[in-house]
Image (cartoon, rainbow, N blue to C red; front, side, top):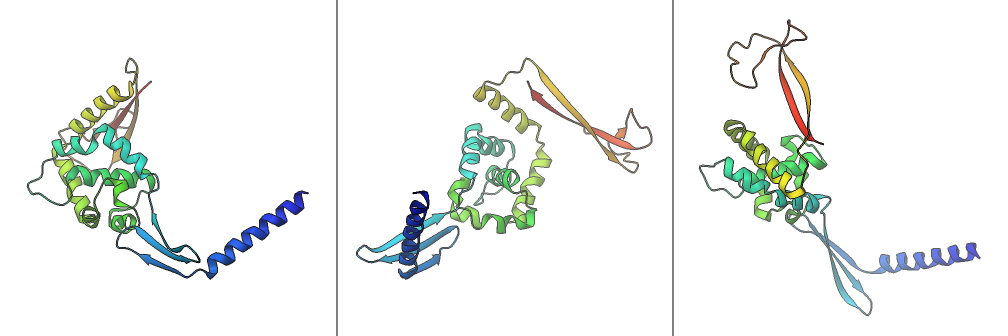
Length: 211
């Protein structure tokens, strides 16, 4: 009984495959991320199937929007010119990449090419504006203005949105070792001699987590 059922299913699958192979088909790659497939089916006419590559990006974009990441970044990192892509949108795109791929900056334009821009919260023109130079500029601006204010605003919003418990906070520390004098290092993070090794210079990196 089981072998007859499997044989019937295989025969049906073969019939479907043969019908698809005989159906005239044209595949067109649209500019950007949409693949358009046209099939001429007997008795039905032309059917168009559009394929959009989304991946995990709609889910990531949902939480970025809920946290107000772009708005907070644009508030803290000011720009002297109006461009196609704001600083907040550029860093939001970088968050997408870090979470799913971790590509170097020079590969971002290739990475984003097959992805539907709407899933990233971008328009097609904004997607075309992505390159390593644009992302490098916004990272320079973030370093100039400092990320502490951005982190503080995002942390507060996360606590309120997700009702995070803050009665107990865990600190996870590590040290980064440097070689050289670094006499001009006077502001935090200050590069100085550590307690466990007085030969090399280092600064302490600390992250915190709620319970």
